[in-house]
Image (cartoon, rainbow, N blue to C red):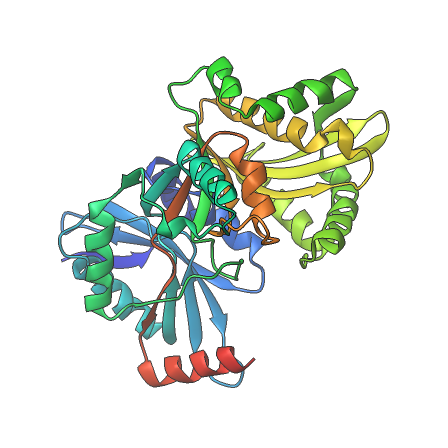
Length: 375
């Protein structure tokens, strides 16, 4: 019988750095970013006392009630191919119940399907030829599918987990669809040649026109944030305050210098684009991007993305992760532009198994769910 108990930070850190599905949202530093939550660093232990899994669990106390919502972002890091997942979750449920948790939310780091760029582009071309609106990724025949992910979801449903419906946009949980560029076993020249012709041209044009990309420091965060607010107003999305990014920068880089990098694309003294990227477990994630409305013809966004890809390749990373995309293939949809930009880099769209809820205390779970729907 597996046991779950808190783990001291160094032992937890040592384990998560080696975990096959380890990601930055399961590192201790991510808990320090989420200042509005409390947290636990939990480990699963075999009867022999060996640590065989881990999870960063975030807790948020509900108003009035002395009860907590628990959330495991992109986790837990367990054996997701185990024949009986209840052996893993039963001790977790018991631990969380003692902590006063009424609902567990999680979005496991498990991919269930992939579509290559060529497949998506062929679908878009056919829709244009027939003057039809594109559908959604989930309606396309997959290039790669994982049977284990299907059986896993059946297990979760039988255990009482509730899958949250997918959304076409982005929500508080992690995106169900992400876009990734495989790097392992490929030369930088192969990766560059995999870019769309126009994207290769834009990377070269940016360099020719004097756009330079450099790594920024903490004192450059206000400039990044100013550009992010401009981008948010232009593209109609909300942003957190500057202090959130300052906290993120300090927390992630105090755990390991260079874990979070700020990239600045400049034309002389003018900032044209800026991004944040985080690296862990030979995987780099593009977290945030901002761009000026000026000098877009100089392609600073292409320049900064290519520099991040180059740096990930130099570190020996397996994957460069563009993170969230919408599943829409309708080119008239305002969310399609994000996918279109990422498609140009020649990777693959991945469907995760999505977000799941487990009602540890069903009555409170239903009340909270109703409240969230009415809010």
